[in-house]
View 1 (cartoon, helix red, strand yellow):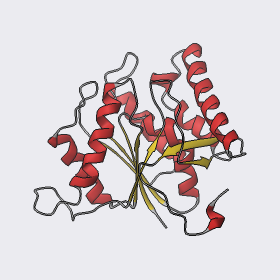
View 2 (view 1 turned 135 degrees about the vertical axis):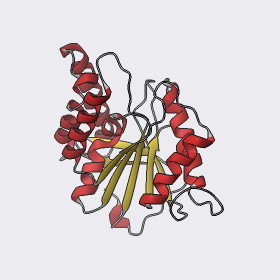
View 3 (view 1 turned 180 degrees about the vertical axis):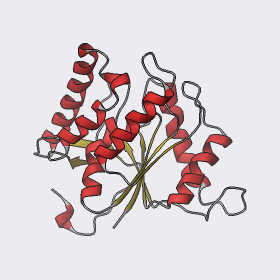
View 4 (view 1 turned 90 degrees about the vertical axis):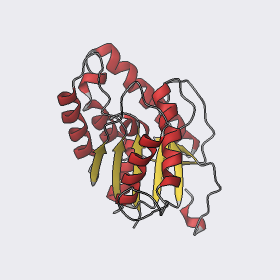
Length: 228
């Protein structure tokens, strides 16, 4: 079975972008971990303590094996050596086969920097002569999930069917009440965006709901039966 690490800029990013896929992976028997580069605070209606309760609740809904939250600064996240090494050290510790990281087009500066940090950290994680903890490790694959502050349209490399997992994905996002459920208007906006995106990408592969992913590299299939 595969070992998977999905990295987000803030708690809730991974849940929004690929929560259904992570739940599917867990249900299929894969080992799934989440790494958040920041705790996401400060925000208008959140606190550090509240946010921690929310990400723990969401993690429980998604049934993931672990969630690590780094102490990098929200709003001031930058791709630098410190951020790369902290991220790489978690990669070395968990030794994932596959990384899922944020899509590179975004209006949020933190999200753009997170993509750069993750790409560099994948390379840093294999370094030998270093003061980083744990043994060198290089994930075989890196894929990009979509949750962008830009209304971008991507051409996915593949789409995962999350029809059975969609309701639980919504429940995981609902756990972040300080971010999305502080008003009916805000929640309706977020829920409608999730519904529209997943419905659209699901329709492209003939299922009810889907989550899109992009790869910079070519993807190989072990068997033609892997295709829906």
